[in-house]
Amino acid sequence: MIQIEEMSVLIVDDIESMCKSIRGMLRVLGYGKKIRYAFNGLEAWKTLQEVPADLLIVDWNMPVMNGLELLDRVRESPQLRDTPVVMVTAAANSDIVAEAAESDIDAYILKPLTVKSLGDRISAVVEQANNPPPMVLHLKKARIFKEEGKINEAIEETKLAIKADRSSSKPIRELGLLCYEKEAFQEAEKWLLMAAGMNKLDVFAFHHLGEICLKRNDIDNAAQWFEKAMSVSPRHVSRGIYFGKVLLQKGMLERAEEVLERVFELAGEQERQSLKEDIIDFSLEHEAYAFALKLLHQALKATPERVDVLTRMGDTYEKMKEPLSAIKYLSRADALEKNSVALKLRIAENYLEIGQMLRADQVLGDVLLLDPGNDTAIRMRKKCV
Image 1 (spheres, one colour):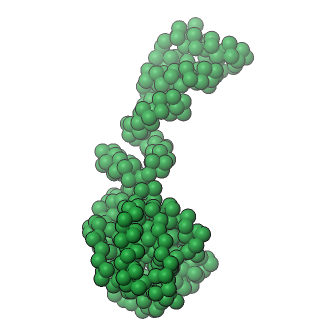
Image 2 (cartoon, one colour):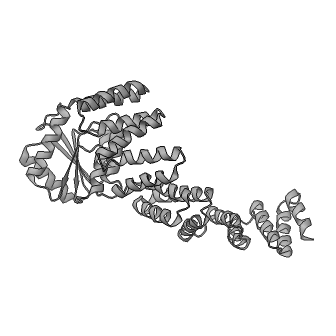
Image 3 (cartoon, rainbow, N blue to C red):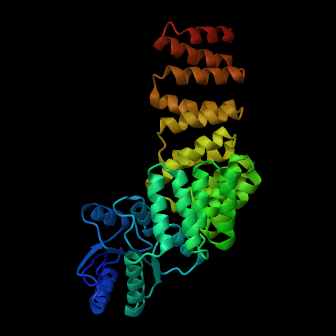
């Protein structure tokens, strides 16, 4: 049980004056005995690892790790996942509300805050945490069953949650997700469609309906579901990546580029590079060479001496049957590596491809200086005669 006057509160906001303002309101309300600050989501996460809190008051937009990213971590933690969370945001639009719902945020407050709005939200959240309704209790039991690998028991408990509150789409969606995990895709689709019909902002339902279509290789309908999810909640990076990949599979390169560029903007700097590497691989796999090259050129502009990027550009131009361009980038990589036999052999092979036998012979001569018995170079050199 949370004692509202005695509870510990963690306020998470990158603006110190806002933290102090919220603390002042809590003092006026008489809420909370121990009040701490964190100035971004990552700092809050580290703090919670050491000392949990009874209530989190979290700003939506923060550097390093935003409110949604912090919420994702909290809800995934067995120790912290039931912590009540009040989100503070200045944006009153549908995608914020949708993301809040899908992240299991207990309540949100629009800025500017008032003592009354803050007090009303906190008292309601604490009351629900102390006296959860039957639907919530059944869903918690279902979650425990799921974590124990008892999917059938989790499904039965979720059905009880549906009976407990037939007006809520959440247990219906959860039932769909459990069926999806069980790979009962037809049953999952039925429940997810029902949840989507009840809640036009249920991006989880939209996303998994898209996944089901992908498993059937129904790319057209998959694209429609992912686009619907993106239109409601465009900030979700993983959802955008999924959608972009579907568009790449469909050959809708212009739309894919638009979606993925938006995703890259939303991702953090470190995550952005990893995502781009993944999309380069995926683009090459699906022969979207132009888009792969665009991302490779961006990477090369940022770090001109990356041998791996230069080599992959050479790979891509080879696949596009453009040996002159392949030679250009492979030669730049070779100039940096100097003694790479493998790069020199590829350069020579491309020279042979365009009939420049003398140049190929010169490169192969360099190979044989490094590796006099190289069978591939000896065999290729015969073609230069």
